[in-house]
Length: 299
Length: 268
Image 1: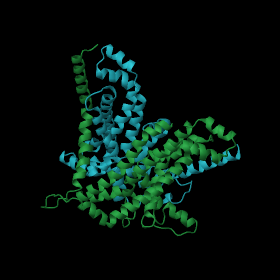
Image 2: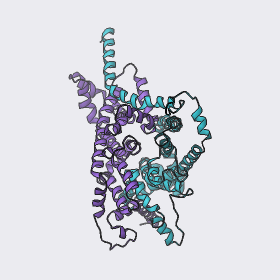
Image 3: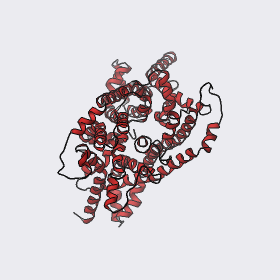
Image 4: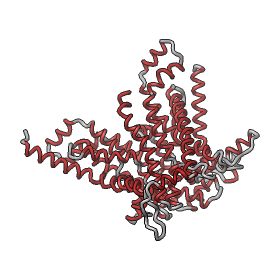
């Protein structure tokens, strides 16, 4: 219908129109994501300007500094430990909640509300509420310990417990959020598969282990990756509960970046740390993106 | 009831009680005098005193206004920016399409809260430190929103679009009359998730604001509870609840919407 010339003009018009529609998004993304991402890379190999000294190229010095920095090593260890404990705990609790909600029990709606409500709170507010429980002496946790005849402790003030006190708050906050994905996955399992297994004489545990778990596998992967991203960007709770202390025993990567950038004003080192964070989270997001096609195929 | 079912019911309720307990305690503390908070006597008199005290002790009215303005500004900007971009990607074939889409998707890997250092410098250069605009700007273009809306726009039937075009509707008219009505559930879900996310956001607002006039609720709450109050638990619980109240009330009223939106929007 169109002759080639008209076709070319039309294609040109569409390109112009599309670029115009995209212009605001591209301008904003370039200014606040692409440019700062590249600039972070650049800053990570430049020295931090101080006084009269201008910034200069230092190569991999910040990364070498990182390897020799005991605080960095501790922060990474804390973050790994935190991830290794908080992620399985949140996922197991989320699955338990979803299984309980999927059974047709009385009071289901109320219980689901109880599980999900912490998700809606600002983490800062949630942490402030928990602060009250952890107070040494007359905090609720210590009162409970005293009731059992056990000595109280300074949960947030001792290196042995500070990170775990933070972990409890984070798990409490996110388990209900992960639950809703499991609940949706469980409701998508065809009833006839479960009925068939039952007729074959499978026990409840066998049905769970052989039918349910494999079918919700893709959901578990989705939750797992989001939990990894969450575990390495946890920061709000630290401002309220511990400030990373005592002695960095509860310090995590994003908080350490904040400290370097806005308390010690060491922007070069902060940029290098940011590169590490982006590498970890970028890897997690990439796995998620790559697995997305498989996920839809699965369902 | 079968014994298995009652066991399940009991566990579900026990876990629910455990989960909601921190909030119940916060409510308890907020409505009682400091002296009555530690011993849980049901006869202790209720009081609204803590709310009056907290409201007076810090400019919470200002914080509320700021948070309200910021989340509204962000949502409005996101809707315009993301709808236009998603529409371009979903409807048109044009030079540079895959490249631009890949560039947009970079933001799914490198999220704004990782780029706080560089974005702080940008805001300083723009002279926007302590402006509410600075809290919102990095979030206006959301790769996640563009991705989500593009998905739904791609499902719009060609026949509808062609019919509207033949009747002489221009690109924006087609967007308004054909695409947007079909995308309404996704827009609502995205809006709910965006509002809750930015209502709760803390680190970035903390960094780009340092005056009481520009603080949002989360930052105001943190400043309030660390600097001024010592160990006045009723007051801190009250402030924490006030900060969360609008979202909590909205959640209790529209539970189903909230849960579905969070799920539909995947994450954040």
